[in-house]
Amino acid sequence: MATATLGAGCFWCVEAIFDALRGVSTVVSGYSGGHTENPTYREVCSESTGHAEVVQIEFDENQISFADILRIFFAVHDPTTLNRQGNDIGSSYRSAIFHHDDEQKLVADQIIKEVTEAGIYDDPIVTEVTPFTGFWPAEEYHQEYFENNPTQPYCAAVVAPKVAKFRKAFFDRLKKQEV
Image (cartoon, rainbow, N blue to C red; front, side, top):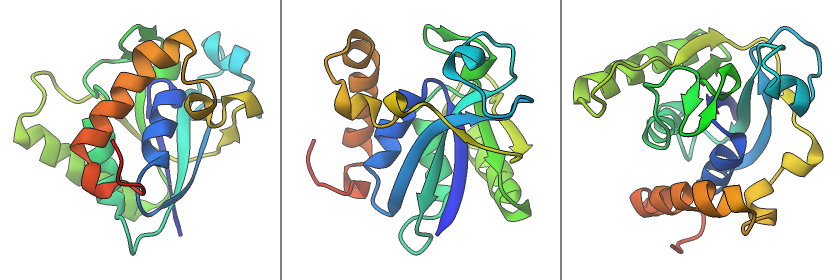
């Protein structure tokens, strides 16, 4: 099993997307990239800890590569907006890849180049590519949040459309073949 730690805005959206991917065994919402040990959601939202909302993904490299994880990552969020995803604003919502080794760094740089050269986005990619230094799981109520709260207003208005778009675009990569 391999590990990827990614920030792409609100972790509720990102967790729901990667949970559905074939080859992914676990996805945990949490915090990475800051300077405070074991931060709380409130502290991270205050922008005082330097952390990003992230997901930590455990995946089977025989079923899905890190490169494919990143291709999906770049397809499901806007990597061109600094410290922002939609109405979620602040450095805790930044686009970030926290690489676990030199190989992941090389792959991240390669995929950023690939996405840039494909001309998918009009603006430059501002995704932070930084060495992984630690991960703190978010509070229990954040785990599987969309699955457990699909009618919550943010989930209904923001998460559900992102998940539906992802499922349509990556139908062949889903654990369960349902839209």
